[in-house]
Image (cartoon, rainbow over all chains, first blue to last red; front, side):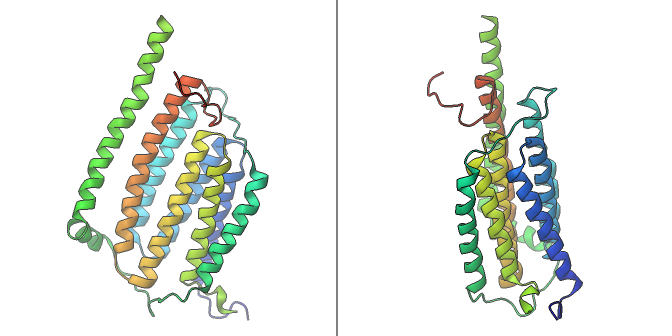
Length: 178
Length: 105
């Protein structure tokens, strides 16, 4: 009686949502930063699965390629570089979790209540069409200027990151030699 | 008991809880890379929100385009933030965010 009208897709949603929230909880609460990084991998893959379920095919692939393959790899690299190489049990204590949890619970309740009680105007039958061509047309049509600005911003950010991480090495070497 | 049938609200509640978990991570972590992981959780929550609205309300690709922008900007921001973390490590030999508290060299 509880489960009437549910399709197998709904159970898939609940499984993905459980994976996402469990992994995110592990990211927040784990004492070892390497465990947090791998739990973040679980979260990002769960979100990619959710995009597939929402018929956002292009976004699911972009999520896996850029977020998992780019951002998560960057995070893992930086964790490995900023701890002692032999000691991957970098401590990652949480400060003030006891006071933050009630505030977070209140905020989550308010957000959930707002989501549930607003009368959203949803489509009667959400369609599941391929989106890649439509996103491409949007990028080269309506959203051309933000697309170009974002490209320039990516270039500037990456050059800046190289300069930031590089300059200090020179300075440390000079100071070490002096 | 039809509240179990998946609709728009379920995605919004999921993204809200994910957002709050990311906020917890940003607010309580001592490790700078841990804070960055919380920021990634927050951005993913916003992305889920965008895509859910695009699927259930608009039916177009406006939400998808914005999500691609958010992913692009998250990658750029992660690169810069991690370069800062590496520079911080070379200065202070630790990446605890409460140990970087001097304004001079």
